[in-house]
Amino acid sequence: MIRYAIVGSGWSAGRHARVLSRVGRAELVRVVVEPGTPLRVSADFGTAAVTDRLDDVLADPAVDAVVVCTPPDTHLEIAEAVLRADKHLVVEKPVGLRPDGVPRLAELAESRGLTVMVPYHFRFVPPLQRLRDRIAAGELGTVAHAYHRMYSLRDREGDWLWHEGRSGGIIVESLVHGIDQIIWMVGEPPRSVAAMTHTGRGGVADAATVLLRFPGGAVGTVEGSWISDPHVPFGSLDVVGSAGSAAFERGRFHARHFRVETAPADGASPSHTDVLEDDDAGFVALHEHFTECCAHGKPPRAATLQEAHTAVYVATVAAEAARTGRELPLTDLRRDAP
Image (cartoon, rainbow, N blue to C red; front, side):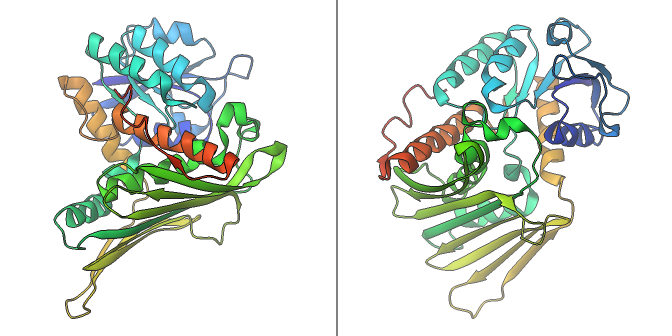
């Protein structure tokens, strides 16, 4: 049994708690809320003990692994403290506001024999895994374009979201997810990036479009906003290749699901539909894999620190591209990578 603590008590933390209750060899034993706030959490956290003292949890020998679900500006500091306490680590995306501190986390984890994952859970959604396998096998031919869209409701929790120094803005906090997904689907990191943003509350970017150019010739588009309404589809992904195309939809806000349709370019062969009704399936599979890695000392096969480093590096350069209005090269993509 791997015993977990969660740092944070908001929406993301609650989702991790719900998912852990579905993982057979996992038990949530402690929750850390923000200091100075009431020691109360939602029913999602079950019977886990609640505290506002992170140091006490890190010193607790009954805790094997820690899930960090705090605002992005705190991720690297808390993650390093978790590893120095010899606990396995899941740190929410983005792993940090900048990629600079990620190699230090990788060195700490390796030197102490600890497992670290960043929950890019789309990499564990079965229909998307099967789509990635078909792309890698050449069923869509040479990928020409990949398009990812992710919208969030305009009433998202947390004042920290509207402080760029805390959230990083929409590209770093949210679109980093789509950046990772397109890199995964295309099968290589991009060589340059451009972006445009809409400025919202507090001068923080709340809607954006990111354009990616890949060495193999493919282009990618990632777009999204924090100011959407429930009738808007929550997320989608389209991949277009020389021999076929695929479309993924994650459903609408109150009826989420995963649906992937693949069609050949010639129209002669039948199309393929892959549907999964469980919106948490990727999260469950990710935590099952993480728990297994912790129990047996195995390295994770996906959602790794290296992949997280690449995604946040591309996202931070994209944010700079939006500020400058220029397409920027990703020249340091492999420098200091874990």
